[in-house]
Amino acid sequence: MSFAPGRRRTTFAGLAVLLTFALVACSSDDSARPTSTATSPSAPVLQPGKPGEANSSLSGTQAVPGKKAEPAPADVTFMQDMIVHHAQAITMVDIALPGLTDSQARSLARRIKAEQGPEIRVMKTWLEKHHKAVPPQATNTRMKADGHHGMMPGMATQQQLIDLQGAKGPAKDRQFLTLMIRHHQGALTMVGTRGRSGTDDDAERMANDIGSVQTSQITRMKSIRSGLPQ
Image (cartoon, rainbow, N blue to C red; front, side, top):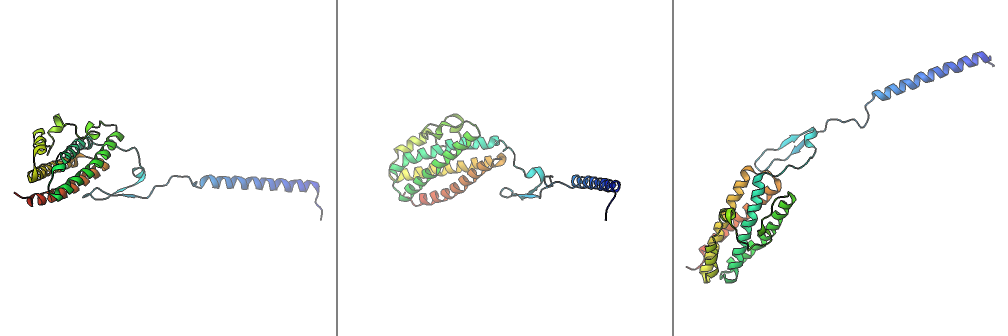
């Protein structure tokens, strides 16, 4: 079969028009269809609460981590003060340990120093991270605590440290344990003070660890002291 030239041109022109309409229709469908990069609401994220507090649910931008908030003044004060407090505890151990006669008292004294030395370094690092002042006792535990630091709960006076240095025999054990029990009780007071207005998670963990360990050690020291000869 043969076609006339005029009819062939008409047929090709019609096909071109149909093809143009088809391309336009496809383009319209694609633009109306949502793209894979469109933002969709994210599922809620469960945020664990602090000890004693209920969990909370975060959604949308709440669940996206942002710039970490500045620690509360109570957190900074706690870290600074506890460095000085720990430093005196280590000083008390250094003064008493060579003359302690009770093996349990000696063992506990060594443990206190072994625990509180690293804690001082952790608190120093925390303060440096947040660009806060670091007490000089962080690197020199024998430095005297003056002013406000000398008045912190449980701190021994200079005269009490002198008396501890001069004590002999079981009296030295008793004096050391009595001073350290009071010192630990003061630390627990400081932990409680921070807990009322502190907000930083790392400071809270440090405070909780100190509270737990020193509560246990107070019980242990009282038991050792009760077994000393009169």
